[in-house]
Image (cartoon, rainbow, N blue to C red; front, side):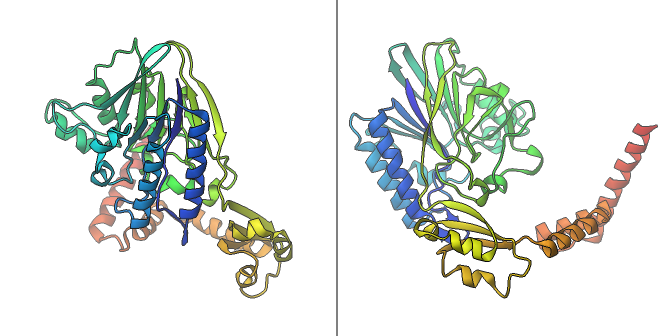
Length: 393
């Protein structure tokens, strides 16, 4: 059984102030052509279909156009979609019963009632049945409401474990899970990109250990924006089909192709490259060197420029805008800026822990700490310092 694994379409997303609609349309066209040519048995889309819970009309129209085109492919290819943390469950679930008639299966909500379970779609190939379980993005509160006082649900890890356990899955059969959570392997986090960092809790509070899903024959993950395995070959993030940050400029975006064979054999994983146009590009050099790089393709690309001139003159970005239409950022890297950065780092190293936390609190909350909060902070620091001294004795 051949499967296309996609996720994190983030329809409607911008790169800085620039719309990515045209780039998304271009990549979606490539995906549609690949489905027509490769004829997969199903397409799995592992969450974050939209970029915002209240998508723009333009984003809504783009998804509608994509779903219509998917439904028109012949022979029909089942499309299985789950919601991610960016999606509005009600909006994504709209007309889902109608879409199932066109083999588009959407799971927007985790089970809400005792008699509800994960949506399961069963497909058939020469080796028999394959059960595909759709697990939408799940918060601990969702599962607490389901279990009440019957089971303690402390965090995301407990929530996902509880939902999977209650399915009583027969692991002697071939089973696939589609999920949109932050999975880790024995505490080791996956490689991340700037475009998803702000949506993941500090300290891994929203992490889920892969031990809860490792018995599946393949686990199709969304949430992390770079393609990679998580601890085991058959547990994978496919990454985004689009570059959504400068940190992804060097990434090779692709469709993850999964070929599932008989039970107890590793799936065969391959990739089909996707070309983003306009692309996200990082350029580095003197002002004149960067200007000399400009050509028809780079002019339309989303460019991050690092200038190395010791003297850049006044407002170099104005000069560059004559040659590049979509400048994300212009930074200066020379002896002066490196010296300033070094001085800033030295100043930071000399700040006491309490001062660093007070500054961090104000930056994150837009207001200073109260005297009561400062006292509580000092008590915590004092307790930790005392404990460290005891441990060293």
